[in-house]
Length: 362
Image (cartoon, rainbow, N blue to C red; front, side, top):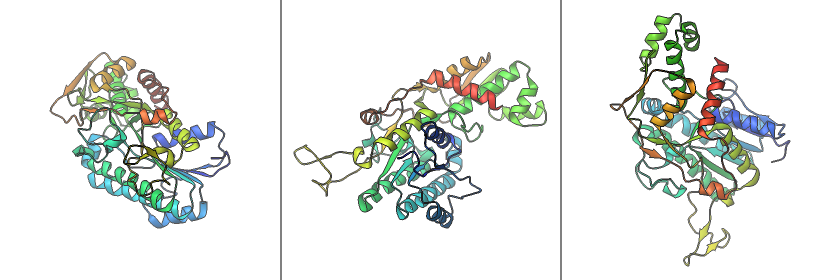
C-alpha cells in the first residue's frame, strides 16, 4: 500500500475498524474512507455495488459484522447468520468486480470446533462440531474464509483472512445484553462499585435512566447490586484476549507486508515443499491466520483482575446453572509469528487502559 492509496474500512466505527483507521492515519496514510450505516447499508447489494463502482477503493479491510456475546448469539441466531453472510458476500464480490488490489477479511476464532485440540491451529478448521451457542455466526465466518480462498484460486485475487481471538479496547460495546464478556464485566463491576459507594447520580448517568430505583431494577436483571456481581457460568472456562489496537497493528502489518501466497505451503507426495506453480492441482486450504497472544486466563481470574482494577469491595458470584460455552479456546499463533508479528499489550495493562477509557466517555 502507498500512503495515498484509497483504503476502505468497512465497519470503521467498530472496535477493530476504528483501531485500524487510527493505525493507518498514524502511519501516514491519507486516503482512508469509511461509511456509516445511514450512508451505506452493507446489507443492500445494489448500494454496495454502487459504492464500489463510484469510489473504486484499492484496498479493503472487511471489519463490518454483527457481533455479540453468548446471549446475543444464541438469541438472534437468524440475524447473525443472515446479516454476516450478506455483508461479506456483498463486499468480497464487489471487491473482485471492481479490481480491489488486496482485501482483508476479519473473522473470529469461534470458527474452530468446540473440542478442538488446544492451542488451536489453523488446520483445526472443519474437523469437528462447532459450539452450538454461536454456530450461526461461526458458519458465516467460515463461509467468508472459503469465499476469499475460492476467489483467490479461481480469479487470482489477493484476499487474506485473519481470525482474531477475543478482542477488547476503545470503542467496545458495553451493552449489558449484547456485549462480550470483558466489557460487560467492566461495566457491571463499575456500576456495582458506584452503588456500593453511594454514588447514585453517577449510576443514573451511566445507565441513562431517570432515578436510582430504575437503575437498581435494571442492574438487578443482570445480577448486579451494591454488594455483588453475578457472572454467568462456573468461571472455569479459559479465554484469550487481545487488545484491539494490537489487532489493528497486526492487520496493517499483514496488509503491508504479506500476500495470499504467504499464507500456505504445498507439499508433494514425498513431503517436499513445492511452489503453487509446480503443483497446481494440490489442495489449498486453511490459509487464514490466527491473530492472538497465545496466552489464556480463566473467566474467574479475569473477573477478579477487573474487580481489583476497578476497586470493587463486594463479591463475585458465579452462576453455574448458566452456560459456560467452550471450556478452553486458545489460539496457536505460530503462523502469525512466522509471518513477522507479535502482540505488545499484556492483559492486565489492557484492562487498566480500557477502564480508564470507559470512565472518560462516561
